Image (cartoon, rainbow, N blue to C red):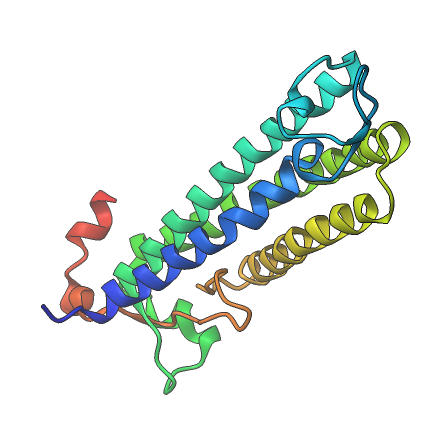
Length: 217
C-alpha cells in the first residue's frame, strides 16, 4: 500500500516525538536519573539505585520528586498539543516552494475557518510553551539543589544534570521562537524539525471551497 504525502509527514512528526520522549523523561525526572550518592548502613556506600531514590525520602526530596513528575506530565500535554497542531497543518495545508511562507494569510483568504484555526493553534501552543518553560526551569533548579547539595556523587552528577537540562532547553527555546514568529503575521511553521517546514498553501483536499471537514474540526 502506497503511503500518501500527508501520512508520511505525520509518521515523521510522531516518530520525532517518540525519539524525544527518552531525553524529556531524563530531563524531567532529574531526582531519579541523575547519579546520586547514598550512605548505607551495614554495607558499602555508593551510587543510589533507582529503588533507593524512592525510599526514605525527606520532605524536600518528596517535594522535588512530585515536581519532577508534574513537570513530565505537563511536558506530555505540551507534546500532545504540538502533535495536534502539526496534524492539523498536515491535513489542511501543503508546503509549496513556489509560494512565500509569509503568504499564508493571502492563500487562505477564501478559507477563513482554516486561518482562524491556524491562529488558535499558534496562540495555544505558545502559551503552553511559556508555562512549561517556567515549570521546567523551577524543576531544574530544585533538582540541582537536591542532587548537588544533598546527594553529590562527583563530577558525573553535574555533567548528567547539565546535559539533560540543556538538551530539552534547546527544544523549548526552538518551539518558543517558532511559535512567537507565527503570531503577529499568521504562519504555519512546523515545530518538529531544526529547520521548520512552512505550510503556506491550502491542501488539495480543500481547494474549490471544500472546507466542510475543516469547519467540524
